[in-house]
Length: 302
Image (cartoon, rainbow, N blue to C red):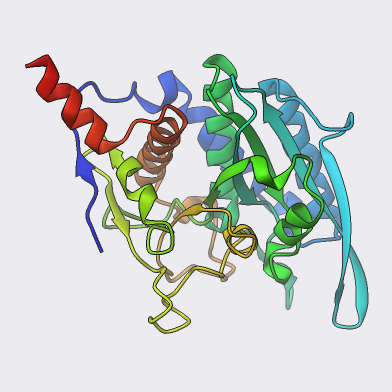
């Protein structure tokens, strides 16, 4: 694994120019008991979808076919289950697309205990919304599609439905950036998987926040299946279509898939720094800014 290169320069403004509270509020809301763990095809899941759609509208995202909701169905344990993906976009200066994704479903209620999924993956949805807010005020080069996927916990069903019936031609999708479990780490370590398969993406992985250790790895097929995350998140559906991906996440922790994955147990400072760093990587790719170009320009300026 390779530690991120840290570039000296002006740091990102503190947590999206003071929008930290909005970021934390989204996670706190979606991981509250009222949503009953957001399991696909439950009332709590539908309530979570309504909350996210409301946030999409407030941010100013556009919808495809006059609706942010994209329904799909799949078979699970001999039953047909209906899910709903939530898709919005910001038109860029060109048609090429970056899909920024996170899943909003979780495990629901098991044996009377609510599995709220604050880290998994309310944190990813919070990060997705924060990134959308930034680009709603700063027009991107690429068209940015923001996908809140359903039924990830049931086999990446929402992401599979997206690539099977995409709202834009898959040939236009140049990159998937997937956020799943980005708020719970005590060592300041955020992993980004994908560069083993797509080494051309390594040049974009530099950040100015020295308090985040951006580590590559967990994407080598020679590792054990538990250590190779290539197909363990929604990015796997994009990879199956040969679309490059960068997956941001933390390693498993004591609250993973436990009723204790609550808002109170996420690492809030780490989370804010992680989302700021992910935003910076998105901006690097969107603007075609690689570490090689930065160093070259510095030499020219001297």
